[in-house]
Length: 616
Image (cartoon, rainbow, N blue to C red):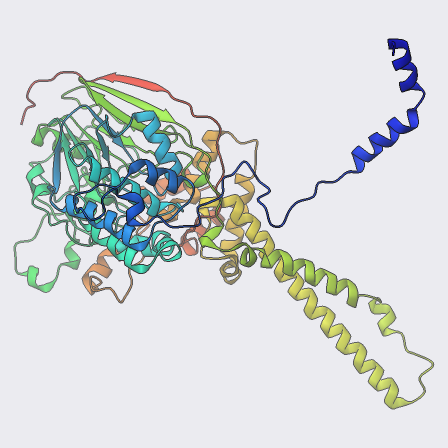
């Protein structure tokens, strides 16, 4: 057949060509109900890894878990048997228990901040920072809560600690405690994925975590900051860390304290003579201490009550500088606060010319709402190197581990009530009000009017139900928009507090705005999340809750200080925002997970100047 013949044949059968095109257009995809339709996402493992699957010789108590098998299984959202999980947690806890309250570590070292259950970003952190087999790591705490992979983070980090006990170090954060894990998501996560025995084992392991670390005798590494009750490094070494962190005192301050907001602009006030101070207000001292000499209150130029956290203190530049000089160290490295670029270097010390305080935050796109970068700090050969990275894609979870059927009830209920309303609204109110002339009997007429009134009542009741379901559906959509900033336990709880519902609507509408910049989105999320940075209210059933501690917490939560007023005017966008935040946004729950694009790295190098012995 020649080329002309081909063209002739094609042109001579236009009907067959058009029919083929029509068939192609009208063809629809058929989805199987038995097979996996999304082939790009691997199927989660059905079986749980047992001890024999992770350990090559499970009978040997010194055998170590296989990191590659564990990592691959956790990446696929697989779980372990209870025996296997308990063995990893308890073996890691035994190693942590033998360590000092303040570790002594040497460079080269990679320092990491908060993780908050973001497992897939934790694996990206190791890709950026280097394999733990060849790189020394120090984590500053907050491994769990507010993310849905906290138990996986614990299992993997504890397995790394078992493998590299002398080069892989873990410190305690304020979220490694019973009080916060019960209030936020970690306990619920353990109950959903495992059992309460796993949760209890984690809490005992958290009690074994060291509180601080001294790197190269130059840097104090701690989760929160310094305390008015900590004068020297020996004061940290003497702390009893094997306990639930108290709501006040030195241990509380090391985990909860923050730098004052105007730290960089803080005037260089003259520091008083160093002396031991108490973080318990004088008015709240128990009677047994009233007979002792009065303890001096913190100097107003050094420490302020931390109204943001509801406990502990804000420490000033003068307080940090005094601590550095007294202990002859160069700087304090801490975590505890989200940073838009993953880190922050504060005002330089007058004595050394080096930043007196450095904050590291290693959870990118925190709560899937902040849109922040994460950072880690590499210190080697007197060179401090900051590496940044973005978030990684991760699986999607509904709020509070809710199943899809429970989550869809508001949406289904709204559609069902709409359908019922359409069925009942077969006639208008005017038609219902028209008398039926064909009915002569008074009894029949009354019965007919009674049935009409009953129908009206049903329509009005169904309309109220439809309105309620619509409200619940809107709240559910707002929760997905708020993501990790989701208030309260479920959408129905918002119905009891209209002010909080209004606050939630405002927050969701702002975060849904695609036109705002990353900086604006970060600052907005931080304002909305401010109430969840506070220490949760204590449970009355707790043994640590005494009239003294309750009053101490109450005094620390007072929000009428000048610093609080300035912060409120600066950060809160409206009076309604303040009212809604302070009255109702008290129990955050994670909602959804969003993916991020490729990883970006940015190196910022700061040469650590050699320095002579600091003046006392």
